[in-house]
Amino acid sequence: MSDAPVRSGSSSSSRWALIYLLLTPAVILPLWVALYDREDPKLAGFPFYFWFQFALILIAVALTLPAYFLAQGADRRDRVRHGLPPVPDGTGTDRKAGDER
Image (cartoon, rainbow, N blue to C red; front, side, top):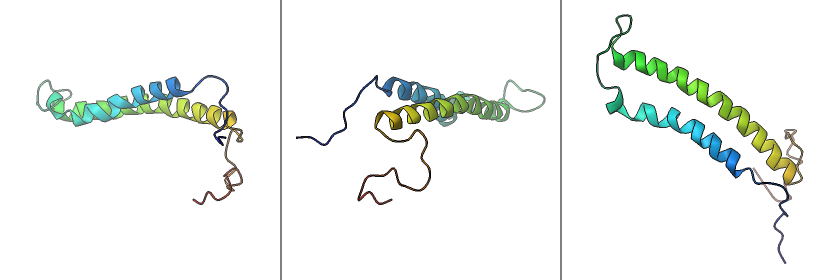
């Protein structure tokens, strides 16, 4: 009937939702220019515009690292659940027949 793989265990969609939630501020805050389009308050002589962007870099790193590690774990779980090795070996032997990349 169907060649779809049988899914067992819990879905990792909630884990991916958390990953997206962690990455959202790192994308949205720099695009929201009205939030930091001003000079005051100054920090060590730097206008707010500059030091806030430096702070955004640190915030993005602090949010991206846990998102990366969560994504690695979710990817591993999804691969095992679909009958693949937890980590790809780089040779492409875990691909389906006819799957050219």
